[in-house]
Image 1: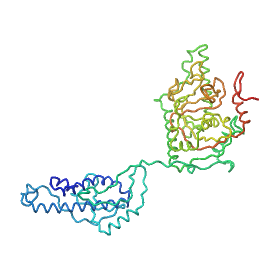
Image 2 (image 1 turned 180 degrees about the horizontal axis):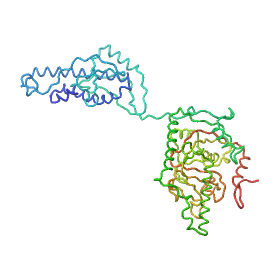
Image 3 (image 1 turned 45 degrees about the vertical axis):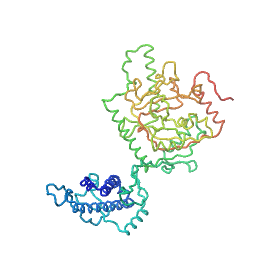
Image 4 (image 1 turned 90 degrees about the horizontal axis):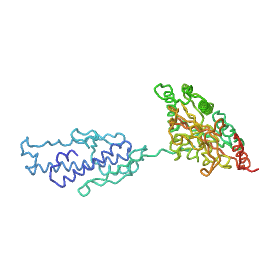
Amino acid sequence: RSQGIVFSHWEDNGFQAKLSACEKSAAPFAAFEGNVASSQRACSARAIDFASQCSVASGIAAEERSTRMRIDPSRPGSASQPPSQQPFVPPQRASAPRPVRRGGVAISEAPPNYPFAAGVITQSLVLPTPTSDDTSRRDADAQSAPTPSLGPCSVQPEPATTFQPVSPDNPVAHIPALSLDPGQPEKMTLADFDLVYSLDSGISDDTDVLDIVHAFEGAPGASGLLQVQSVHRAKMASQAITDRHSEWRQSARKLQGRALSSSLPKPSWSAQEGAEQKTGKELERWARDKREREEVLWQLLTASKRMEGMPQVRCARVFHGCPSREVALSIFQHGFDIHIAGTKGWYGEGIYTTTSAPYGLRYSFGMRDFWDAGGETGYVIAGRAVFAQVYPVTQADNAPHEPLVPGLKGKQIARAPGAQGCDAHCVCVRGFPSDENHQNRTYHACAEGQRPDGTELVVNQEAQLLPEFIVKVNVRDDSKLCARVRLAAETWGRTGPHTSSVTT
């Protein structure tokens, strides 16, 4: 390449063609050489062949230059010209030293005035012209070279290629095209999980697992109808799980810091300020609304405990229903947020979970209650959620006289009046019969004093959730038992007359 720069003004087509071939070949080969360490022996074969071609072309160029200066004294640099008019001519290449093999590539230090692809690499390939035996051995090595193990975004080596020599008819030897493969992480499977409970193996001695099983089979209204088939726990050996644990702990530490910081906003829904100015019905309404929010928050507090070393942060066992096992595995690998439904959240924009295991099954059965899914199997992720400052959602957040129109639908976490600084929303919900707008039962914030059918916990950040288990749950195929559970769900806790879809 340097010869082409110094003698580019020479007017010989054959010589120019050879120099142009070297220059055009240098750029792609320099980029290819940057990845030669990962390509190992397969790339070495290409490097040796290319270097030999450059060496041959350079030797021919040097011989022609010397001959032309002897024949034509009018050319620059000839002996007949005064020294002041002679351009700089680099000294002749010294005989190439025996190449040293490093990382599967034969390399040697080049003289300082013969850089190869100047500014790109500092070591030049200076190799002797291979003999026929060398060429045969090189081709055999290239064909038998193992494909190196490459990570994402690595240059993929092509199969061994027969190179054509540089000539005026074929000025550029074949250099394999570089390709970037972004790579795909290997999908998680059940092999990345430990079976910690199954119906066939019997009772587990892990208290966390037993609590999860009991959360389904022992829940009110579910006894005898729900049966846990298996529980799988994610292995900590998985990099995705290890990273998620680290992010979850870091999220808890951030929540602790924000809760203690005096410069950040804090929720005001529980503050007593302004109560003195209220009287009569207004004071009564304020007191009842505050009590209802306290009841909702108490449901969450009793289902959670403080984090060790972080007293401002609480942790709760939560459940997240999935339409299939594949979706559950994908959430473990890629996170919860990519599976948020396209509709806006009724109780704030965030990631939804529940502390009620049977309620979580609704999302496994296409928003049907489990008593309407007799004989079916659902998958639920059991994990942990952390939160520090929570806003309890109640009917007071809805418009007056519109209890079935969620007032926080589509709103961001902590944007409701009095919710500033909150990192989660929680709500206690009751089921309502299907109507012309919903083919299944829907769940809305409880009316004042009602006991809930379930709960919703909405967290602001995905890192606040830690998936741990995949639970496989079966609903018994017993139509009579399902009908009795449905009857209780439709009438329990209601005041006044009720109708039921179940006939006696």
